[in-house]
Length: 195
Picture 1 (cartoon, rainbow, N blue to C red):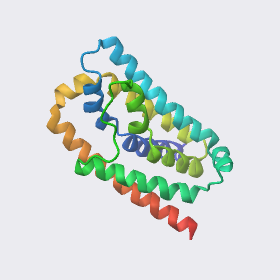
Picture 2: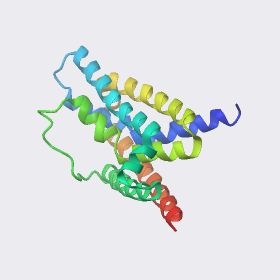
Picture 3: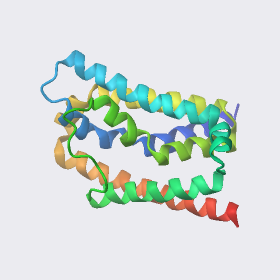
Picture 4: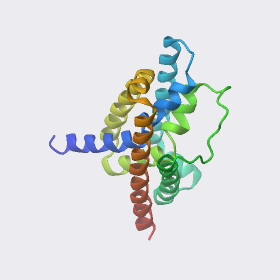
């Protein structure tokens, strides 16, 4: 029990940082502007459901997916880590790499759910946690991080109004740096496993 709680807390922290729901607040608020409160809450649920579905899929079926595609964990770690590093630098520096500008035909929930919340970095993190802890600890951590993410998106408009654009922008940049640092560690671990 003494090792279980720290492991869950570490896994939750890693997933929460990579999901980075606070970064999604201004984007989500902008994409749902003018919608009813009920619709905004529905879009928050869709975003979390999409991200959660992918995370649970890779938690339970990662080896099957890898076997079918002929991949191994170290190569996925390196690829996912490099993409995660780019995403982290994108947020830290405020640059735009490959984001679709036209969200008019896409539901906010789906766009936020993936790739913003659950992208390559999140999937890589889920798989690494599963590799290190089995399925129970990552399952609990995923569930906790999804609940926290849903609460943040549910109250996105209020959070955006309270914090303001400047504070959310600063938080996004700091979290972007943390994501980039985690990415470097993931890439380094993948290289060590390959070598």
